[in-house]
Length: 274
Image 1 (cartoon, rainbow, N blue to C red):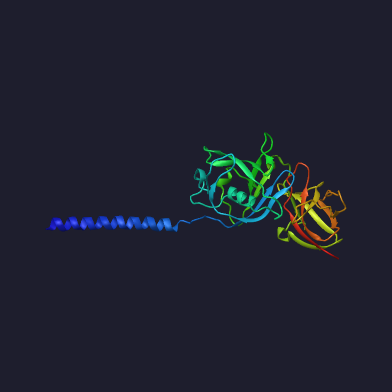
Image 2: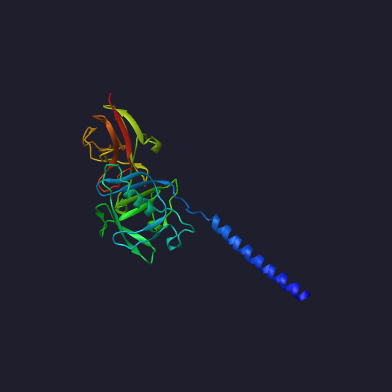
């Protein structure tokens, strides 16, 4: 009788142990985040001749199929880079390609090659800019070059993600602002026609002011180059400053450009009548 009772107690203990273990695993799985971060990030896509996208975009981790590659996962767990799934730098790029900026622009397309050994894509084309022996599509997060592919990088809400053509060979990373302290919270400006505006241009790498940079204004909705900045052809002086005014009302995106340098982030300028 004692032997039977001992066996029954041992069976009950085993059942309890298994049940508790399963419950613990279930609790552990339920506590795992469905997505490490799937919110909005600031994304910029700079092509050889124009900005393809600049603004906030939201997405989620998903499988990706590109024209030259099979469909495969792209969720940050690629190559065991992160423990949990999350939206990646490549996910954000693909999402932006389906939400063109400004809204009247045609959608741009993305292509790339899948490399099994890296468990990631190499982006070879965005829009019409194709990778060559000397020029490539480079990924930067918070102004630092990525050391792995975009499917292994999970940006967060404070991240600034930049896909830029030829960034690796660019001499400077231009930055533009309306004040010498480069307060980027003031990147939305309202001015009147003819009102003098002082712009500052610097190199983000060295934080030194840049001479010889020009300003380019594009219509915010059309993205067409607008000859509205006067004087035409003026560039920043030795102090990295340039004073201009707008000749007509409208909503424009103003960037600093210089041969061989990566163009700046944009200033959104609303020009109102006098």
